[in-house]
Amino acid sequence: MATSEIKEKILNDAVFMGLRSAIGVIFIVHGMGKFNPGFAEFLPNLGLPPELQIPIALAELVPGILLIIGVLSRLSSALLSIIMIGAIFHVKGAQSLTGDSGVELDLILLAAALVIMVAGPGRIALAQAVKKLPRCLH
Image 1 (cartoon, rainbow, N blue to C red):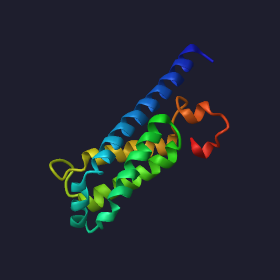
Image 2: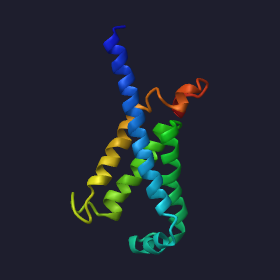
Image 3: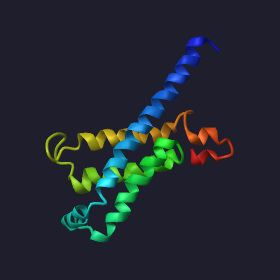
């Protein structure tokens, strides 16, 4: 294998680790914010019961953590993709690409989650270090 091929593979893995980490941090921060009682008061405005506050917060927080450490990355990305589709169409109504109701951040988070879901976490991940984990848990 040529040196440039080795460097390219290392770079690809580092990029996937960076992408997973960036998305993970964003979802951890957003998930933590949803534990605020004000979010429960906001949910009825969306037609959702306030009891969904904790499940929604955990649905962003836990996959964010799993993405950073590189375990269950594909499953976490799939869950986050569903959340982002809900945010784009149900919460914001896909009204505008930019502005107060803009979906540009939601779209980029959806795209990044889909990339991780399809391509996997890369080789710099805890799931890669633990060789006994089944491939579906990567």
